[in-house]
Length: 148
Image 1 (cartoon, rainbow, N blue to C red):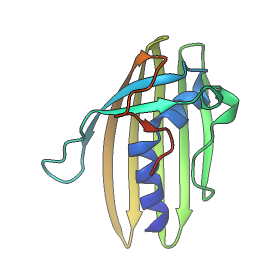
Image 2: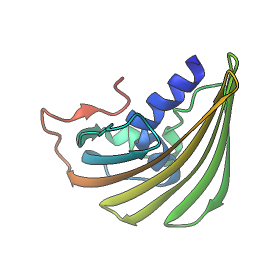
Image 3: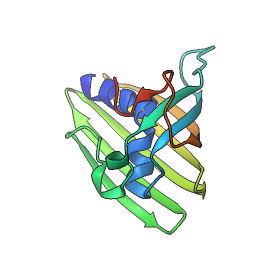
Image 4: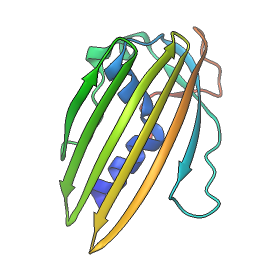
C-alpha cells in the first residue's frame, strides 16, 4: 500500500516531474488544475500554484517516480510523450498509462489512467491536469515543486 500511496502523491503533487521529463519547461510560477474520476465521491482538487526553479525546468533533471516503479516511454514527439509504468511492492501493484501534451510553451496537459491492485481489489483512477504558465516570478502562494 505504501508504494501506491507514493504513486498517488506523485500523481497529485508531481505532475511537473512527468512534464519536465518529457520537455524542457519554463521556470517560474505555474497553475495546476486537476480533475480526477474514479476517486472518492465528491473529491475535488483545488487549483494550486507551483514554483519551478530553473534547474528543475530541464528535462534531464527530473525523475521523481518511486524506485519500485519501472517506466517505459512508448512515444516521444516534440509535443507529445506517452508512457507506461508498473510499480510493484508491499503486496500491491499499480499500472499507469499516461500522456503529456505540450499545447504551447505556456500550457501542458497530462492525462493519466492508474489501476491499483491491492489485496484482491482493483481500483481505477483517471486524472487530467492542465498546467498553465503564469510568469517567471513566483508568488508567495506558489509551493516549491516537489513539496510534499
